[in-house]
Each structure stands twice: as C-alpha cells, then as structure tokens.
Image (tube, rainbow, N blue to C red; front, side, top):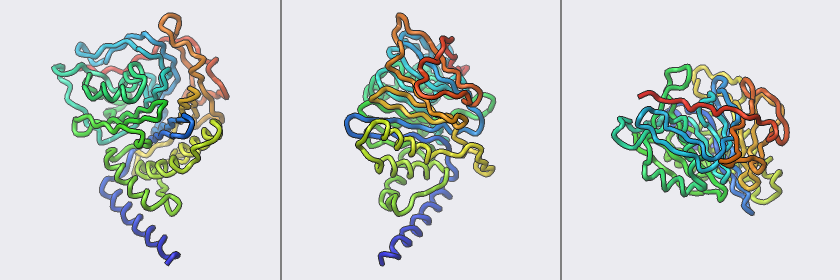
Length: 358
C-alpha cells in the first residue's frame, strides 16, 4: 500500500492537470513571489519573460516629479511623494520597481484582463504604462494602496505593445516591508483585489481566483511527492508556492537570498527556448529580487555572468537635490556589472511614459 499510494496520487494529479490545461489552454509568462522570513526578512522576487528583447534599463526617480496619466485632456495628474528605483520595459513604462519606503510593484502578463471603458466621463485616465509607477509614487504600504485603489481614483487605459497590434494585458502585484501583499486584476471590466500576506505567489493565466484553486489542489498532493515541471504559468505557480513555504525561515540575509534566487531561477524559462505552438511561453530575460529589510535591489540578466545590486540607502531621493539617474544595461541587458552598482548610475533625462491617444 505504501508503494502504490504515490503512484495513484500521481495518476490522479496528471489526469486533473491534463483536463485543466485542455480547458484553459496555454498560459503566459513571468513569475513573482514574496518570501516571508523571521526577524523582518522579506524578499520580493520576479522574473521577466518575453519573446524578444524588451528594452530595460534601471532608473532612479526622486521625489517631487510631476506626472500625467498620458491619455489626453482627461488624464490624472500627480506629483511623486516617494522616490523610486524602477526597471523599464521598452524604455517607456515601469515594469518593476521599489520605492524608498519599501513598497515593491511588479506587472505581469494576464491574457484574460479586460479593462473598463474610458470615455472621459468617469474617473480620470491612467495609461497602463504608469500603473505601477502611480503606486510607487503615492504609497508606503500595500494597505494604503489598496484603500486608495478601492476608491477607483483613475480609469486604467491600456494600449498596444510597441511595434505590435497586441494590447497590453497585465495585472499588478504589490508587496511591502511587513510582508503584506496584494494582487490587482481587471476581470470583465471590474477591478478585483486580493489583499493579504497569504497571496505570496503570482504568475499569469488563468485569473488569480483560479490560480488559488490550483494551488490548493497541489498543496494536498505535496511537493515532495510530485510537482508540475513545465514552463506553463500554472506549473510555475505550483512550484513557487511549494518552494517559498519550504525554504528556511531563519538564517543570514545572504543565505536566504540564495534560497530566494534558487526559487526564481527554478521558475524561469531558459533563454532561447522555442515553443512554436505556444508562443506566449517566452524566455526569461532578467530577474530581480528586492531585500526589503536591507533595501537592496538585486538584478540578474540572462546574458550577464553576474548578479549586481543597487543600495537604496545610498541614493538621494530628495526633491531639492535628488536627480534622475540611469544605469544603462545595454542591448538585451548584456552590460556586465558586479556587486554594488549604485555608483555606476549617471544623470539622465527621465524616460517618457507611453501614452494612449483618445
């Protein structure tokens, strides 16, 4: 009986998984999770998976910068309350980043996203390229962001990905130095928020409610018995969910960082992987890990032999003397940095957020 039970479990799991994948089809790309350890050790990790080079550099953005929702006359306007360090996509949007208060924001693909209609009569518009930046500019904690987002201060407006006719369909994750977390999606035109420390993992399709149901199923199987191993979003969700709860909760910061990097690499997709029948499963271009306690933002490119970090404690974010600074990562993030790269940033013009004409 002890020998046959795992086999029966495996057969049941495979049958369930096959039926699920047939029902929902192939999933998208990118993974994110929050590690919650003892003694305030919190890490947020993400991978950026994309079929082609995605045009990423790192920017330091000080407090006091004026911004627009970039959707025409009826755009939301604001001035940044907090300084931030962000990774761009196509050098015209914020795809990932942290602010000086310890809030992290990540956007990942969600094909099922459906945003509300923007007609200029409701809340002012916010281009999707600046959605995570809005959170980083305004809030210190996830709870503050969720409270404000529930009031729908803006209408989120999507646009085409540069060089394509494909509309950007993404969802947003937020995490802070307490380990609090939120996943924000737009389903059938309605904002849906999952808020709480239990929402540690996010990948892509299907919608988060369905991902949670799958995670519950795999938790009963047990990761030491079997874990799904493909690059599909649901498989990556299951693996990250198991590992983030299985690695030690105590240890030195660098030791825990190594464990966290082990997970985000485990759910990454090898560079150059070709899946002609599933083009939405894409290579991992880069990975980030934010150490909320030490305020270190780690970056790792698939084309670089080294991991490097930026120390937020060394950055001047003040309105009076802080400057926009850029770390040029090069074509496909192939420039090589090692260790503390904070000193390599150079003064720069701010990148323009992609607008949506209306």
